[in-house]
Amino acid sequence: MEAEQNSTAILLPINLEAISKTEEVFTQAQVSVRDIHPVSFNLRQQLNIRLPRKDIQNIYSCITIGNSCVFTDYYNNQLTIYNTDGTDAHHISLSNKPLYITKVDSSTVAVSCTGKTILMINMCTGSVTSSIETSGRCYGIEYDENNLYVVTDKGINMMDLTGKFKRTIPVPSVNINDISVYRDKLVCLDNRSIYCCSLDGQLEWQFKNDQFQSLRRVTTDGEGNVYATDQWTNTIVVVFEHCNQYRDILTGLDGLDKPCGIHFDKKENFLLVSNAYVGKAFLFDIKKKLA
Image (cartoon, rainbow, N blue to C red; front, top):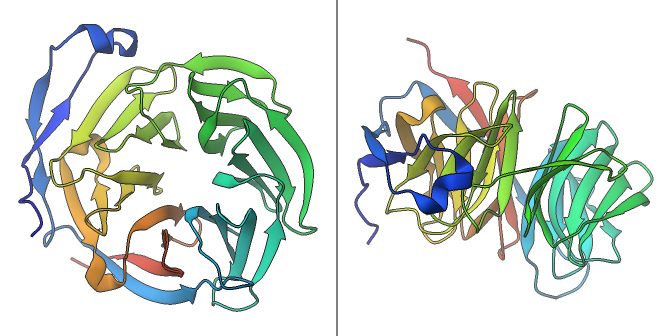
């Protein structure tokens, strides 16, 4: 049985550099809006992700680029690409195991990989155009305003597309695994909390709920709302802007089975979600309900 929703979210308005040295916190009411928020989520397309041979897979993350959905297949060292209507599946083989992925432009993605490597890949040709060696193991990655933001075991590194280091952004937790950048905000998460920070690392709010213990990936929409996958509960949770409301919007009843990858397409206004081990992904149209 799922745990009851805890109605408290923790807000920590403190300097991130001092987060491990202070316990001064204050709380704000966190309201579940399962039935009252004026947004609907409708399944547009289910994608059945097939392997080129019988094997296991681990879809680590996903994005959309143009009319394509791109998935990082960790175990099989490849990107798997489908059209948004589920047709024309093909693969790009890689020399490293791919982890996280972000769109750079209309034809280029950046992929963080094992081996402290970021690969720049041209999706039209299927070729690796360049690679960046990072100082530590790299995880979540996001491109925004000519900058790459990369989660490493040394913090969130900000660099240009050649790998030239600019600065390190302090992290609110030692276990940060994924990030999303929206306007002047950086949203990141560990297994149990979602954090919103300024781009200089100042923590603005933290969402924590005892129901969600295995948060995996995070994305943001065009209004600053935050979406995250939780693998143990087979749930997508959305935390509305400023962390004053949340809602678990999609569950196992919608086909989720150990969901991991998630990406909000701001241009087309749909949500892409991928299961980690069961080869299925889903496109959900998101619409505002009329008053």
